[in-house]
Amino acid sequence: MVQIAVKTGGQCSARIQVERKAFSMQIAFFSTKPYDRIWFEPMAADYGFGLRFIELPFNRDTMFLAKGYDAVCIFVNDHVDRQMIGWLSENGVRGLLLRSAGFNHVDVRAAKGRIAVLRVPSYSPEAVAEYAMAMLLTVNRYTHKAYGRTREFNMSINGLMGTDLYHKVAGVVGTGKIGQAMIRIFQGFGMQVLAFDPYPNEGQGVRYVSREELFARADFISLHCPLTPQTRYLINRKTIREMKDGVYLVNTSRGALIDTQALIEALAAKKFGGVGLDVYEEEEGLFYEDCSSRIIQDENLARLVTFPNVLVTSHMGFFTVEAMQAIAHETLENAYALEHGLPLKNLVE
Ligand code: NAI
Image (cartoon, rainbow, N blue to C red):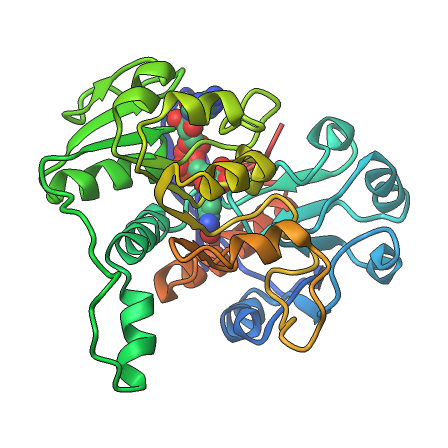
């Protein structure tokens, strides 16, 4: 028996017992790494699913590998357009299982009525928020540089001076699940928190202000809104000018929230105290790969990593034991619901 959460009308939900019988949903997993297998393989066996792990990304060249599968499971940099949706549905693929909360990489409108797009809306908001804080503390206090120095017995602290967070103003853009976790962390540091969200979640001891006021007043800004046509290049030449000199910026959401060219110009002009980027607008094909022996052709990324006050990491805010376990569980629950005609609570429409 397996427990499944189902909507029972309105917002209510209940857990029902469903007989787990032998069935054979076949799922092609793309962009897989060894750490995906660790979580998915044992759980999938329990569900009776047949999985094929494919290391290649999912794209127009590789989608043919999905032929004969009931569902395809993809990650954040696997872009699925209208044509690919058409091919998948014509070839009997019924489900597109996203191992992520964000779904900006899938043409959801094209998928409607043809293929069910199922995501993992929440796995560990704290994982991402804690990571955003780790990035902020790193670029502020230069712990990454201190680590390198002391390993060579360079015990000098010249150039490593940071600034207190206590009593400073934090700005949170997007107060959904991760944004709210970020607010709690900032509050724990004794900071004053301002927030901007077109759909505020009141009652967190945070003051909602206009986007302009947040940019003008915040000493530390953390981005937690999804990538949409409205939020693309939210951070651009104009909005950077609105910010305080010496401001710290952290982006753990999606790369294209920031106009990278504008960011680089501002960094070169010493506008920022520090910048932490866990995501990058051109990350596809680079992030999650070992590119250390390649000549990097992306001039912007190459430039970004030269700044002493910039930390770039490879879209790993989610990467904790708890989050990986929850992603695997919820993804397979989505597949199970699809297979059994149960309500699709994580359907993206
Ligand atoms: P969520 O859906 O719970 O919250 C998003 C919030 O953004 C909502 O409150 C929404 O009203 C707000 N929002 C929408 N448009 C906005 C705008 N124009 N300006 C300001 N706020 C706006 O999403 P959640 O779970 O908090 O995730 C946020 C983002 O974090 C995801 O969209 C995803 O891109 C990113 N993410 C990154 C991960 C990583 O490993 N670095 C892992 C998981 C998510």
